Structures are given as C-alpha cells and as structure tokens.
Image 1 (cartoon, helix red, strand yellow):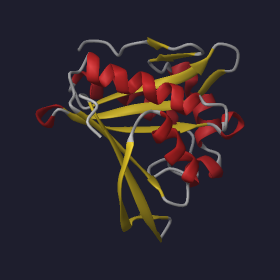
Image 2: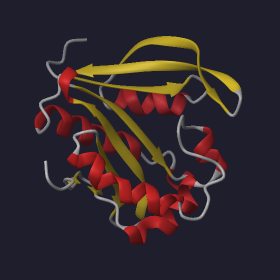
Image 3: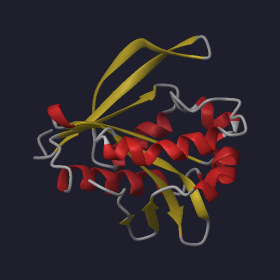
Amino acid sequence: MRTLPTLATERLVLRPFLLSDAAIVQQLAGNRDVADTTLSVPHPYADGMAESWIAAHQGAWTRHEEATLAITERDAGLVGAITLRIELPQRRAELGYWVGAPFWGQGYASEAARAMIAFGFGKLSLQRIYAHHMVRNPASGRVMAKAGMTHEGTLRRHFYRWGIPEDVAIWGILADGTP
C-alpha cells in the first residue's frame, strides 16, 4: 500500500486530497451544520487545520491505519470526504464521511460509501466494515442502509458532542453478505 487509491463510480471520483483542496475543505467542513452532524469534525475550523489534516493522510495510509479520500463530483468538484479507519489485525474498518451542506440529499455519501465498502472488501480483504451516527441524524442512517449496511444496535449516551451526550446507532456489513 504505497499511494492512496483513486476510485470511480457512476458520478464520483474518490481521490487523494491535494493541499490545494484545503480552502474548500475549510469552507465545507467548517460549516457548523456539517460539524454538528459528525462525531469528529471540529468547529470552528481554524486556518491551517485543513492543511494539517490533508498532510496526515499519506502517512496514515502508509502505516495501514486509514484511507481518506476526497469525494468529488465531475461538475461540482469537491463535495466531501470519506475514510476507512483500518484495523488490519482484526480485518475490519470503520467507515466515516462528511458531505458539505450544499450537496446534502443528492446521494453522494451513499454512492461513495458503496465504493469504499467494495474497496475495503476487495483490495484490503477486510471481513467487516462498520459505521456509526448520532441517532438525531437519521439521514446518515439512510446513507448506511443504502450502502447495504445493517443496523446492529444503539449505544445510549455513548458520545459527547459539545458537552451534550449523544445516542449513537451502530451499523455493519460483512464481506460474505451475512445479515
């Protein structure tokens, strides 16, 4: 695993981030509504954070820890990000993503998630991919369902976002298709 992959779908290209993407990342991820729907995107999104985040991707990939790709649409350009946090000894990964608010409801996250899941099972030989979302963000659950994942349960008050306890829904998919 030397360089991050590039994956193509019907409408999207998932590619490694470039430092030149930093301003758009800061603009999209820096939107409070985007940060509010994720477990890890900071807010406010300060100058320099996007550059540092992008600069860390290749090293995380080389260490077999993460595959983070830009979600790009042929006409709209950069619309979001998608990540597999890889746990190779366990042959599993956690799927995470965000999409900029102007691009919500257009199916980009579902399409990107299906591509990353196929990559994880195919190229990385993973056996399980899982994801979670805040229960108050049912749109993310719909993304996971459309990507073929199964709702496995809910962890009550599992995560604190901005000092408020959040219930988190867990989803998963297995390489052999077992429900």
